[in-house]
Image 1 (cartoon, rainbow, N blue to C red):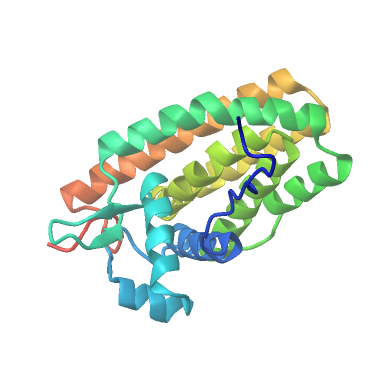
Image 2: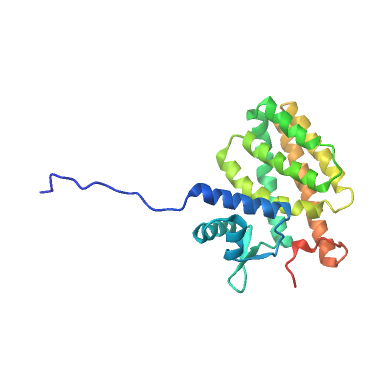
Length: 238
């Protein structure tokens, strides 16, 4: 016969402040995407603590998340570094992007507001010859696309993927004519979205992703052959 007084069920667990973790992960991810933390850059827990101002516990959890997203990797000395992308990894990244981003474009056409469509268009129309300005606009374009597709699962998958892709953009845009071609591809995509044509948007997205993949792989070939000067940031120091 059981006790008439039931014990209180307590499932509360101790865990780090998730908002702090999210902010650390976002800050590091943006630094990687912008090139401020270049591929191959080695990082210690102490350095990350000093850069972010958060505890060692939060840093360790943030690093684990960044590793699971493919943005950081362990080194032979058991430290961590910003992930170094080779041709095989880049090809895999773009294969996944080609499978998912056209679907996001279709959903964006169906679900985004007119204001979001115009905000997306504004990123393409920014008049600037400055590469960093263009890169920042591309980053914002991806953010709007993810939000406007109204699919949290797809958004969660695309966000870390876009961070890795953005880290490649600076290199791929060194290919002659790629920057102008990319702008025209974005304009074609935006035109389809303004016309609310999911089929055209998906097709335009496919063309853009495949052209971007070709440019990224060509840039890596140049880098490996030593032709592309000043872009060695995609390789770890020898």
